[in-house]
Length: 360
Ligand SMILES: [Zn+2]
Image (cartoon, rainbow, N blue to C red; front, side, top):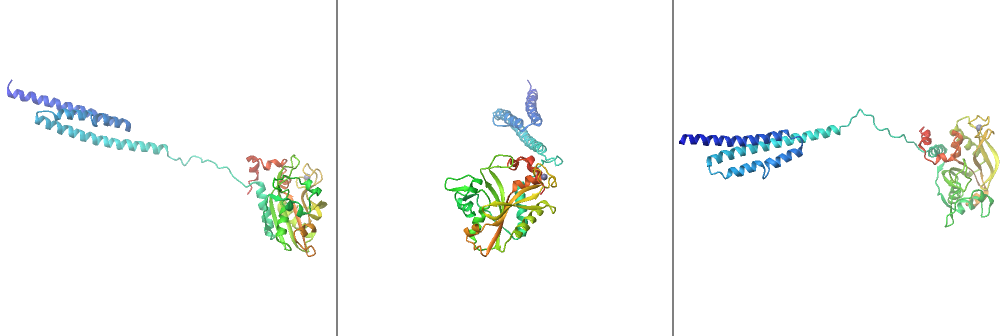
């Protein structure tokens, strides 16, 4: 073979080899372009461009070539391809990252035109609302709000209030006794024992509300626990007219100007004289209904002038000081006002019942 022919053949061989490299690398390039996910791209990168990948293998083969010209030419080509493919991979990776981010943003996009979640409309419990209303009225009249403990001594709950040990009225207010001689108070009147004893011979105007406990009959209008308000005033020349005026004002504020009340003689150990306070039945306009038991009147409170013995027990000089007091159950007042049949409705926390009082 002539030298010229040999050169030509060698040249064709090189051309074929170079085309082979170009073809392989072009295929890798297509694969990179076609990758749909980052995972797919990583796989291609490892398989073709990483250590031991196809490009590395071609490079290893090339580096051992004895023909320096061919070696140089091929290494240059491989390096160019490697650099190009790495750049394409990097751009592709950026593109996939952006695609992923956009997809995420689209999924997490907040649609402000969608209807929001409706929060339930909350209101204070009807008993709390009534207590606040009563407190508001009495604060205007210059009264002081006082709270007293629900766990009380026998002395404060009974003895000081003119119910000594063995007094039959103690049976009427039978309660829950605790092991250390204490009991759950049967009325908020325990606040009288405490405040009067702490402030002998003082002019006082006190209003107090809270839970009281009795071992009571279990029917629609009685439970072992209910809520009571106790109000009392001490001073010089306190009379029944002060009591009546205060009660009338309270009832008109709560039930309206047309509300009428009446007094009936009664007995309580801690007041003398004592009265039951009746309110004209507003459910039937005094024509007679179930609530007023056809009488036109409903019993709402117990009242009277503070018994002199109670004042003496608490250190008051009864020649100078007198006082009035009254107490009533709040559940009963609301039952009369709204025609509620069972006292348990106040404690069941049934949202359908409570929502009816969301007037505030
Ligand atoms: Zn009635």
